[in-house]
Amino acid sequence: MGSVAVGAPVHGAAVEPFAQPAPADPEDPAAPGDPLAEEPVADRTEVYRAVQASAAFKQIRRSYRTFVFPITGAFLAWYLLFVAAQAGAPDLMRRTVAGPLNVAWLLGLLQFATTFLLTWLYARNSRTKRDRAALGLRWDTQDQLR
Image (tube, rainbow, N blue to C red; front, top):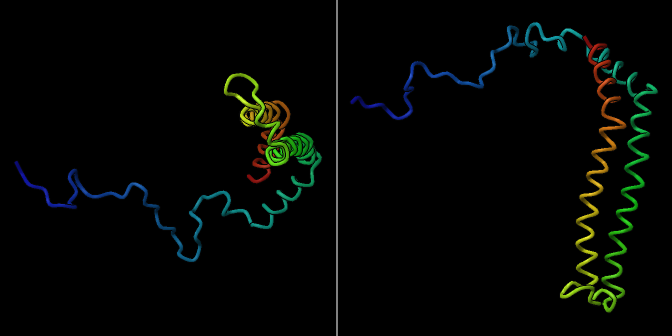
C-alpha cells in the first residue's frame, strides 16, 4: 500500500469546485456575455421604476395591505388583550375550565392556534390573490430587461 501525504490530492490535480473564472478585463468585473453587464444601470432602474408606478404593481400592493394590516392589527389586539387579562384580572385567568386547564392556559394555547390559522390564511390569500399577478409582472419585467 502506498502512503499519501496530508493535503496531497488523491485523484489527480486539485480542483477548486467553487472557483470563479477571472474576468477577461480586470477593469470590467462583469463576465463577457452577461446580459446585465451589457445593459446600462440607468435603463434597468427606469424599468423597475416604471413597474413600480404601474397599475398592476399598485394592485398587488393594495391587495397585500388590505389583508395584512387588518389581520396584524386584530392579532396584536388579541395578544394585548391576553397580556392585559393576565395583568389585570388574575382571578379570571385562574378560573378552571376543565380539569387542570384554566382560562390562562386556554387563552395561551389559543394564541398558538391563532398564529397557525393566520399563517394558513396568509398563504392561501397570497396564493389565490397575489402570486399569479406578481409572477406575471416579474416575467414582464424580465422581458423588458432582455
